[in-house]
Image 1 (cartoon, helix red, strand yellow):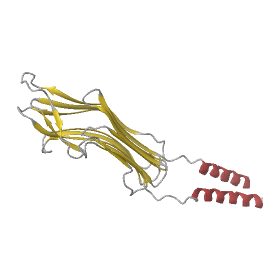
Image 2: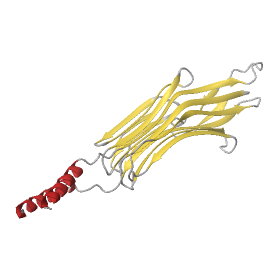
Image 3: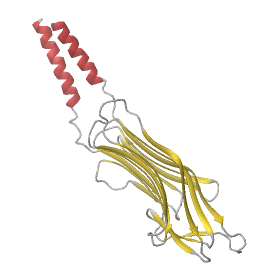
Image 4: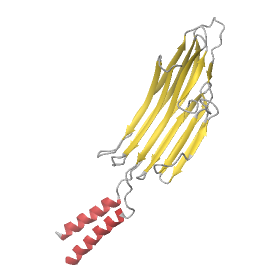
Length: 265
């Protein structure tokens, strides 16, 4: 009987010592990002054009990580809407990265937002906002022109935390609408989210598809519109962090119980 008890204690000690590491990872990416203009009336003598307003510093690219409540650790303002830049943040077991590079009107551009952590009570967050200092950018489109924006988007979220206060998500969001924001709307989204893992084998939630949005100016003069573009990732486990000695104390308690059983035997 005592031998069985010792074996059970030993198994419990091994089980505690080999608990799987909890981690969360969120990644949102956009590749082959293209902005294309199509001339709907080649005989009107008007060259297709697209002009963005630049009033607030261009694209906003930021990453932050650490414990809740602290300010952004790094930001970068692109020189214009759809402007390139990068941002990175690492605080202990939490990290985040945001970047935008390339030419969407030429060879194509790419964007990445990621966040990860492997300890409780931390978070990571990143964003690439392709508008004018925020998620949106007003623009002017030439007469008889179609604006087409395409990209290969992927959003992935994976969490192995069993804590109900865990949240891990990623998204890519694109939208075109008229200058009032109330007219014709063209949107596309890739998104993924996971909360606490309760049993089972963890597997990532993934949304992977080709995105496409359009805006048409069928008038004989310039027409205003609004572009929204945001690539975001967030990973957090904001539950209270266990006391540092919790696991060692548990192991010590089991070892003490085993020692007492051996004394009795």
